[in-house]
Length: 246
Image (cartoon, rainbow, N blue to C red):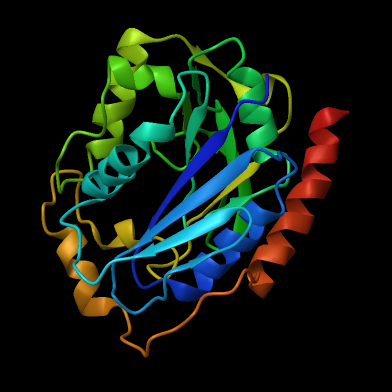
């Protein structure tokens, strides 16, 4: 069965990072896939490639959950229960086997979350236990029957709430049991992770604060194109993963 992988990528004014995210998605080995980018700065062109669609909105969404739930709603007519939804961050790095590994786990488990991942922080790469977050989450579409979407909140607890609900109803598989970690959580500065503007998980203004600090620019058309930092990190992690497999 050729199950489809739908990848959701919400973004806001992180154009160089987003171009890298699209490039890394196009390079995935898994063939039956499509990325839906929802960019709500009003400065990006609607566009599409063979594997991705960019949806540009002039009206800003009030929260990240509202973005995810919007994509669920517009895709409902084509979603099949055995297909998968993956979150694809616009600022993190995904290796070529990322989707394939998740999809293999999702043959046996409704939800797939790695138990460890690479993190790039303070100019260093480390392998650490996975925190509760959306950046490496994958689940079968059938899960939406019991957990219909992200809980609307402007706080930094929306991931914890959604993932807790998934774990309450479904068994979770671990993709790092069949392959070394295929994702790099690139936490270095606000230009990569907008959640760096949050002062606490209860902060209800962090999402609005991005408006103040992100640069404003002209209307652009995005290209699948990697940044230099991404290539450097990919090569380093590939070598480190070889040692894990030995």
